[in-house]
Image (cartoon, rainbow, N blue to C red; front, side):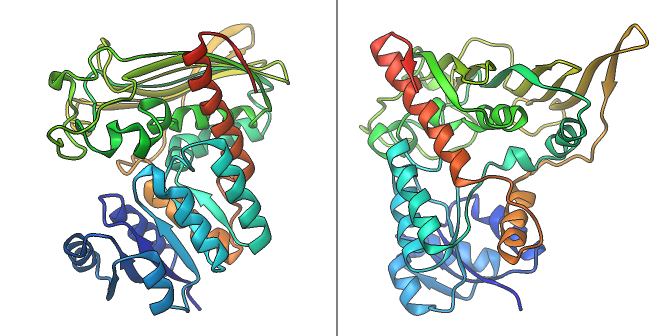
Length: 360
């Protein structure tokens, strides 16, 4: 018998969630959004029969729901996830898990108490490149990973001016919290070690310059708020002795948008990278999945060939959630890992504000 899922939020990510859930055999029975017009459009587009104006109304109207998918501005991730968990529903939520570690800690407790699955759409873990790389890591061909470099850097990628993305009270921050995917992927490859210290800096250069707006995102809001960073750079050390550097930006003077994790292991190094085209997905975009090792005294670079996935794992990530609820797969991410990630993000913002290293 297929599980029944209700979606909260009529944004563009809903289509990926729907595709992944249905591919796993789930039934999408309802959609809720504060904008009835947006909800009606998304429901019609995705073939969803029932529409509601809130999660509370949806829970009352469809008590047989097994799970809730959350696709809303960051500020509302934790409150809605908490509401769903307390109602006894499994939860799949867009990133970031919350706007701070305190909220994420509350979600972790609630999920354990409810004995329900709580997962987040860290979709880059579900990319074919990441699955392939984890196979090599799991088989011991990489060895202990000492260091990694996590990067999601954009030259012109501010997602609208004055809207919720650029309003800290709604988003929790700028690219540091928005583009934390590669930090998560680097930690995933390293085995999610316990963090010890973080040192970070944030920069606001270009954050008000509309020449740096991305080709997607939300519409500008006249007289809206833009009080977040445009870029963040930092360095994290771990109790295990491992280390990670990170670079995240919406607007930075670089050649082109890059999404990547490079790592250095005792047996091999590796790189998972996407170089985007001018509109993100054009034919000038390129993907790389490589291992760097030593064989018979010679330096060897291995190119790992995987199927193309322009959805960047979003459909596979949603599919994994359903299969996890049903017991057919292990979860690609856990509340413990999400809490650790948010501790690092909190520490990075604190370090940038104090201009000092922060103990985690």
